[in-house]
Length: 523
Image (cartoon, rainbow, N blue to C red; front, side):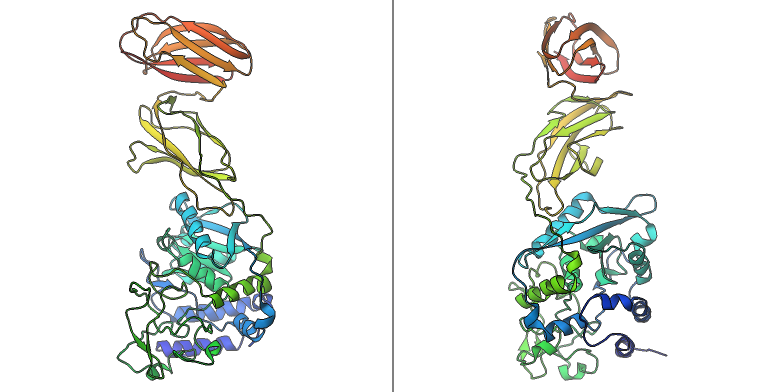
């Protein structure tokens, strides 16, 4: 069959798809039984489409096919029986992060949290909250990450199925789109999933059964100079008018979302309305409402789902997708008082085997730990998720000023702040382990003059009879050594290294459990 234009393509797609989809859909599992047939039809449609190749900037905002929505048919036919209470619905999600074969190119940890934070904020009015059912799923696969077309998307989704949770993917490309919902999964392009973007909410709206507000106009460029009646043969849903008694049968079928004929990305005015005036079939003029997530208004315009859209989404979850509901409490994270324990400010620590520690944050189950140059130059030596309150890092640069900070979160609480940075310095050391052996470790004065003795205070949990105290230059040249017996409990020692030349020195306390360092400066 030769399909030569948009109208013929859509007509071909609609006729073929209608052969396989029933007019009503009592349960979502009906779609699974038609999975392979639907895939063939959708693949045929997509092959006929143009402009789907992956680009650094997506060619299209949303790649979700506008197909017959049998769930909405069922919902509007049984709306009175499908009402839900306004209790919070917690939805499970498995979020996969795509990277390249060599393990590079992943979405940054902070960007992942920001995207999930924005998603929960966008669904707050609907009283729907997303919950990570499992750890972030990192997938090193360049083909899936570049995601240049829907063939790659189908391969990705079918190769990584999940049951009982939303299946979401973040990759560099999304078949030339900012995102799409297809094959019971959501795909998002990194460039459209920032903290101010609403692509995630838009695609999750599709996941929960919502069409575009301009449903039927997909791929059709509205022209105010052309009478709207001239578009009727191209628009594949009944065109909605400003005044319609049968609004549940037209466009997106929701009566509290006004008419919208704009299927391209558009800017809004100060009231979040389109600057393009449209005229309906009755000759009545109107502007599109850009505040709705399911429109194509730019992200700075959008900020809500309509009440009827919210009712439909909640019903879709409760009655069509109950398997994704999670019976788990939503625990807040208290990030008001975060304490970084080690290194302490201005500590001089080894560049190898450095164990960073921080106090547990109430409600947190994971953290982003970030170690960078200070002042920050864009270089990050560590930038990963950590499940504990400590981690040992190797191969930091020696002789540099660095800083570290944390950002706590848990499975459903992502909108958190960073801690303050703690600044420290590193020195070159090989094969050592720097841990907080003692409950207390103080050295004073740290700037001795005229051969002044040094006092060391230790609070040890154990006896360490073979403890060495050494003083050395940063290059490793030892200028003083003394053996001490450390007992369990409080210890106080005084050492007299004599008069040392002016400069920086490292005082090292070494025992069976490890080594600790403090910086000494002789004026």
